[in-house]
Image (cartoon, rainbow, N blue to C red; front, side):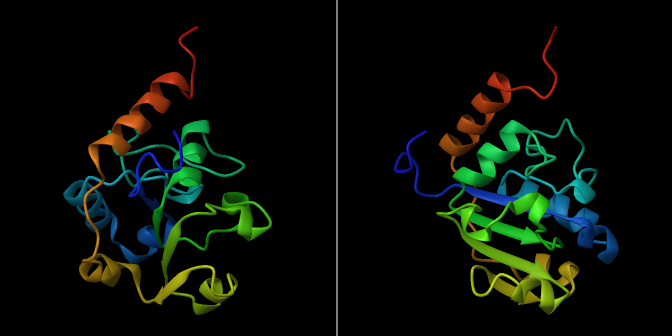
Amino acid sequence: MTSNALTYRPVLIYGAGIHLSGAEQEAIDFAHYLKIPVCPTWAGLDILPSDDPLHIGSFGTHGTRVGNFVVQNATHIVAIGTRLDSKATGTPIESFARKAYISMHDIDQREIDKFGGRVIGICRDVKDSFKNIIAMEPAPKEWLDQIKTWKERYPVVLPE
């Protein structure tokens, strides 16, 4: 996939804050409503069932190949209830999703501030975030098709 092949490649990153807020159903409904793929953090892996077509797999040092492809090729990332630690983003932070617009929704302002302006931060309980994120469009079919191709080509467990 070339960087110009598709100009809108959204992904949702779901973390443990969704559990802490009791917003699991809101997270599921939001992803399904907009048909945007989800790359959960390790602590958010169980928010969407693993067989849900929008569940891509985790990313970062403990993530899947496909999860890393999706996050690194995304143009729009909405991170909800995750502090985006260095195991997820790698270091330096500038190498994480270099061409993406990143919106981070977290209850802890210090976690948002650590990115020094690299993210647009919204400090609030994440349950409220799902009610207030309205400026997103559904993921384009071409982006979902590319992710499906990666999932088929790079399965977590090989058939053999």
